[in-house]
Structure formats: C-alpha cells, structure tokens
Image (cartoon, rainbow, N blue to C red):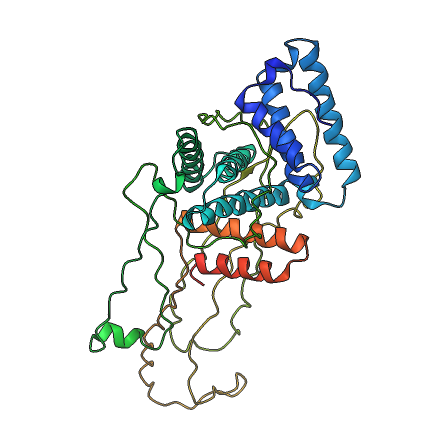
Length: 392
C-alpha cells in the first residue's frame, strides 16, 4: 500500500512522479525506481524534507526503499547502472508516447488516452535527471501535455475528443531524377538513400516527427490505473547534479618503421597529412542524490594518444639497386625519375553533424538496453539505426 503524500509534497515536481511510481512498482520496477529517485532529488533540492515531521518521514521512507530496491535487484542494469537506466527510461517514454499517438491516429481517443499522453510527458521529464532534454524531446513533452488537456476538455464539455485530433502529415512525393544527368549516372551504382518524413506544420504545438523509433510494445488501454484529471503544468527547472561521469575514449598507435639505410631515394613520397585528433564525446551528466549508485560499467582508463602516420605509398624503380659493396661503373648519370602524382585522398561519407552524433549515441544506448534484456533483434535494429545516423 502506498504511503499518503504529505501536503507539502503535493506539487507537480514531486507528486506526478510518486503517482507513476506507485502505478508501475510491480510491473516496471526500474521505471518506478527512477521516478522515486527523481522525486527524492526534487524534495532534497527544494529542502522540502525539512518542512515538518511528515515530509521528513516520507523522504526517509523513499530513501530506504531506493536502497532496498538496489539490494534486491542488484542484477538489473536498468537500476544499478546510470547509462543503462537512462536508455531504459528514454525508450519507455518513447513507447508510451507512441502508444497514445497510435490511438489518436486511429480516432479512438478516450479518457485513458489522455492519461497515457500525460504519463509520456512525465517519463520524458524524468530524463532531466541526466541533463537537459534535446529540443525534439521538449517538443514531445509539450505535444503530449497539450493533447492530454485537449482530450479532457472535450470530455468535460460532452464533445467527442476525436473531432479535434491533429491530422497526420502527408509525405511529399519523391522528386524523380533525370537518368541522363551525369551526376545521377555517377550515383546510379550506389544505393539510394531513403526519403525521411517531412516535419509537421499547421497547429501549435507541432507534432514531433521521428526518423526512427525504438521497438513498440503491445497496445494496452489499461496499462496505467485511472488517475485524477490531468492539469497541465509547466516543466520544472532542472536541478543540476554536482558530480558527473565523463569517460573519454583514447587511441593508441606507433610510428612506421624507418626507411632502409644506404639506398638512394626513389620517388618523393606522397605528402602526409597529420593524423586527426580523436573526436571527443560530450560528457553526460549523472544523477546524484544522497544515495550513491555504484558504477559497474566504468570503462578502463584511456591510453595515451600517439598520432600515427598513414602508410607510405612510395613507388620503387623496377630495376634493383646494385649491392653496396660493388662500386658502380663510371657512366653518365641519368636524370632522376619524376615523382608520381599524389594518390587521391579517400574521403568517407560519415556525418560530423553533432545532432546526428547525439542521435546515434541514443540508438547505441537503446541497443545496450535491449541486450541487457536479451532482446537481440531490437539491439541489431538499434545499432543499424545508429550507423545510419552516422552515414555508414
């Protein structure tokens, strides 16, 4: 049985996360854990636990429950590991959002759909525990809250909420390519890139678009128990955590072997370009509360970076050089051979856009989360999505 919420804690920054934790404690213990984790951070950050004895005892009970959950479920990576927990929460929020959106697209909206939209907004807000959400996530939060309020308002007024459902955007037709265009002929041998969906437009807030999404879970209109009518709330400010974990990957390499001694130079080597420094991944903040989470998946310390030179592409003359011990005959010196043209530098089609890199990191995290639950098909799909975002 859930403990009654003290009056001082009946604020949206705390109450909606406690309510969702009570709903999902038995069926999604990892989500319930992070909801209570975030609620404790909000209570302590706002010093609400010092309001009176009731709030202090309630906060103490939450902390004891968090410690007990970590002990009982020490093999659940979504609970004991920050990175896996972040990926799990993001994936569950996306699945909840898609479940409500599918119902709306089918024009089968009910009061339960409003609660599902409200739950999706809450779970997306939960990701603030790991840092400020991306602009696309902010759009989803606003869209979910707006639909929850719209549906409940229509039901209160005795109207059909499906009459005001946003229309699904129609994809733009693909532009036909001219086969006689030389550029088209050059690209004809390469696989054609798929056309992404166009962004929504026309009504505030706009419907967020998705180039890809994590695997869906079956529709279940009774997934969340009935809740009081939703009152839209503005997103609460994020309380930054004092500590963060930011492992930095490292690379190692060695210089090429020196050229043989005593032989005359053949052809000037191809100009070498300096090795590019390793791309640094922006650090990700980790949640902090009075309880200390173990870091079981910390990467090994990075090795020192040593730039490596590309392989030498020098050409050698077809005739062998005379042995160093035999003096060459006195003949007229032939002109030195002309250096060959530098070989074309191979370029890659990988993207360097930071937004694509961030999206690829998310898909990689979802793949790790899927592997933690032995969901190999989902992990493979998410890894492919990550590679596609990088242009591979």
